[in-house]
Image 1: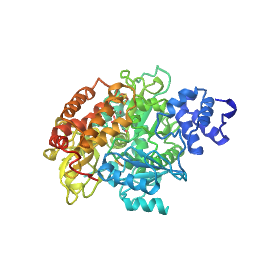
Image 2 (image 1 turned 120 degrees about the horizontal axis):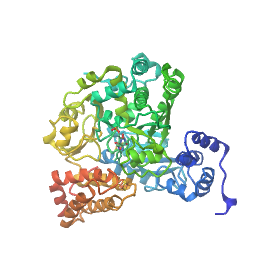
Image 3 (image 1 turned 30 degrees about the horizontal axis):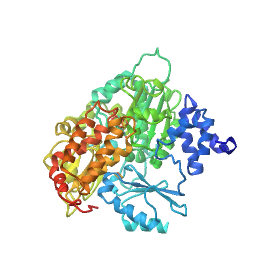
Image 4 (image 1 turned 135 degrees about the vertical axis):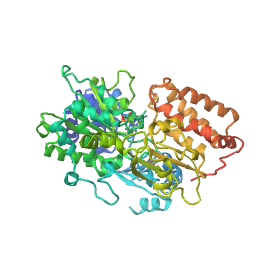
Length: 160
Length: 428
Ligand SMILES: Cc1cc2nc3c(=O)[nH]c(=O)nc-3n(C[C@H](O)[C@H](O)[C@H](O)COP(=O)(O)O)c2cc1C
Ligand code: SF4
Ligand code: FES
């Protein structure tokens, strides 16, 4: 990659990452925290961001890429403003999460893993959200929604 | 009936903050330990209490802690880690404990750390538990302000720092050695044992990993003693447990009950029995990686060995109900898809064997199966399910619901083979 294209990290990002570095014995140990911090500010982790983080942590970009792609909540592709995490684990499956997925797909015009053309929503599957007594459940951004029905999903996504 | 773990938790009651926690007797165990108990005394109490780990395997907590080297001669850190990665399908107990009574967990963690003389404690919490993480961070800050954390805790000379580490996803992070890899900033691949984390864990230092609910129990054991704790159980095992029921029951939920409570009391009593129009066909007693049990097991006690003898595991104690209108093949396929997705990819039987098994189940479920498929499934169970063929317990766990479904619901698999689509239609 052309070094000119490599982004630098913002002051805020650096401060947050350096706060994590205070707790760890070597810089690369803060890799996951650093990826999450940058993603919090930028929505996702671009190649440029990845290179900037790797340089700051004194590790190779390849090694950091291996870590970034391991974790499903580190996004290496752009996502919408809101990420919908739809639980498709067993209790939610019994209570109809497949039907909910079709409702979301119909309403937003996206399949699992896709982002709406207006960049508002990305739909992803997630492991059991620990809310099985109120299945089916999903998160939109950081908010948990449960006891969902196709009707309540339509309202959630349309009404805001 | 005493319910120590949920004494501060009730529907509609606000989350317990420092004031409310202390008003209700909180941090008395910590005060007692710092004033009059040595680490050895605390270890003895936990060993005598017969507490078994609530994270799934039921390993005796006191015995686990006793493997931590206590000689002062080795300089360097020792770590206590709370496993708050809760992602086992159908498990919903640790989030409740952390969101509603964070200080109970923190007090238990301080006491556990004191017992093994750890100087750093982590809560490793899954990324999606934002509310729980925020409440824990607040509670930890309040503890520093009160002198319950940091330098010279309550004048005892003991020092402990506590941090919340929020994860970035993947079920495998809950496996304790994978968790340690993740905490070191690496890919969360499990590690070979031995060496066990108790001796060589985080950064090669002695490390104890315990489940949230296990650590919450410590608070009460230190305050009220081993005999009291043992007397809480109504069967073989000691203490109380958070039991849960999800699926098509009238009143799904999570309740604190004595260890050894009969399964029927939980499913038919607390959960109110099946929803109208649904019959019970079977249940996974403790999360998605436990073997099915069926109606004939309803009168068994929820004790580790009793459930073990019946061919399953207590696991996390949160049961998932299979009803008569949900396809058992579909349910097992949902679970297998989950485990295949969540494989860390380190070893071949799991990385390649689970997707293969999923594909066979998909063929059967959708009417494309053939009679050889059942033999292939049995074959995969034998190979992937055998401990020792894979690097960690994820893959053997994935085989548990499948092997027991083939035992109890074999006619369902066979019916699928002679049909051109799932006889249940789309169950949901
Ligand atoms: C694939 C896998 C996932 C696990 N996930 C969790 C988990 O989310 N929480 C947990 O406490 N234990 C989990 N465990 C069990 C841990 O490895 C470990 O046994 C447990 O945290 C020990 O705590 P305990 O002794 O208090 O039960 C998992 C195990 C495996 C094999
Ligand atoms: S059994 Fe699966 S999850 Fe465990 S180490 Fe092997 S590939 Fe990874
Ligand atoms: S299975 Fe969806 S919240 Fe537990």
